[in-house]
Length: 293
Length: 303
Image (tube, rainbow over all chains, first blue to last red; front, side, top):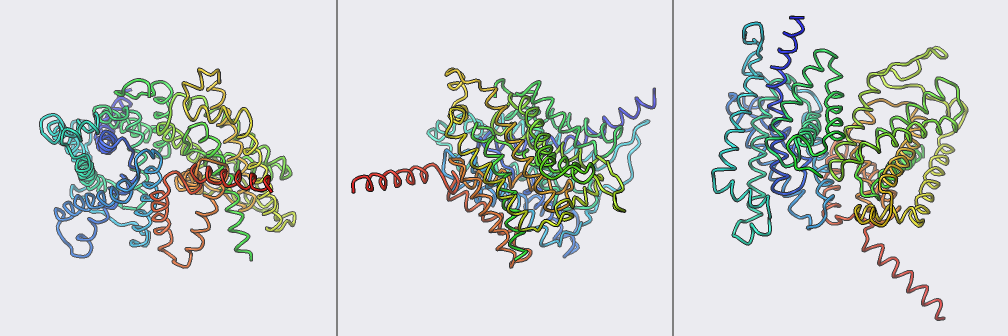
């Protein structure tokens, strides 16, 4: 009995820490949706491309890890701009489904570019935290997971300040509320879109850098995987809600880790999708969303 | 020659996938999960011929029925959500189906070969049509006969009272409900029909390729089957047919570019959607076409 309790708690700790990554992707999607009222299915590929760009200084120039980190974040931001330009900027208004398809096109484009350049070989990503777990009483804490969690908490605090305490945040909320009115009052919607893309790409770059280390080996398939996790998180959390995305990310992490431990690795995704279905059927507005979608 | 037959076969099968997305889409529902029904159709029809010795046509019907029943069942929970939520929900459904087939093992030794769904190994040796001496060209005929029948049925559906109800639900659910249309029934019916058609596509595919595994029905198929009708246009049944033909034709003709093929494919999707956000055959085009036909009819009546 105590063993079971220990296992559950251990996986709870892992799940919460890993879930911080899901929460950050969810926040990225929520920011896009809040400001642009559109989904960006190329968000996962953006993060993936950033991670891969980080490999360039590492493998070609043997640079230290902080350069890799900066390249990763800068790379994600640049790719984010390209996505905005290619998939959103030139789509005329009133075509809801078109950006969905253009971002799918971008997903294929980015993923295949990386596949071509890397010859589809998995690349090793060094883990700067080592693989020694920290002892915490009877529990083990993986340092890379801990780093993800701490970064996630830091991001949430920063975002809270940014959204609620700064001019930028106020402008962003104004655009989210009513773009036309915001434009009339002198907020450049176009500029806000760019800034939102920068912000969410940077979030993705930082968390991507950390999560890449937990993988060990990188492969381009993580692009679609991250997009799907992000979509699952925002639906469970309620579309457009940042607190919802945080809660849903943590919940998803916990459910997945419990499933992996008790049922086996392949049940991780099955349980994640069943959780999604449960929410869609029982509470379609999500944890924190407004009712009636 | 063989190569062209292969490309045409795949185009026909993917037209069925596009049509199944279209059937759901004309009630205003977006599905990224039709590849799940396709997988169910393929596995069930494949098991019928390869394991249980059932002839081809009843086997295809069993595959379709299994997928249709699943469509019916999925239709209900999906009623509660709309738009992109539904897209994500159906994507989840498709992935669950894929993961289930990744885990299922049900094999028999038949003629010295291990036949049946074998987890990650996939489902091999569904060689019914080739065992009976059918050529690929003959099978191509069967595929296009199926496409033709489905397209005609959808064409007739759209000109029936039910089709008007479909479009009414797409336009405005609330108004449709007020006009006495049973929105629930329409949506679940659309999902069931979509399941049938996707199941038919899967059943035809597995007998064509003799093989199916979970990789085939993963995300890329989900995306491309949703892209066909949206790229072709949701205004008429020609949309998904043209979308599938254009996209696969492009992919194949880009083969000379080797590894850059898929990169350019992605770029072309972006470009086409930027210039024709309502699809290649959009409503404006259809209106112009209708106008042209009317004018020609008027001209011939005058002479």
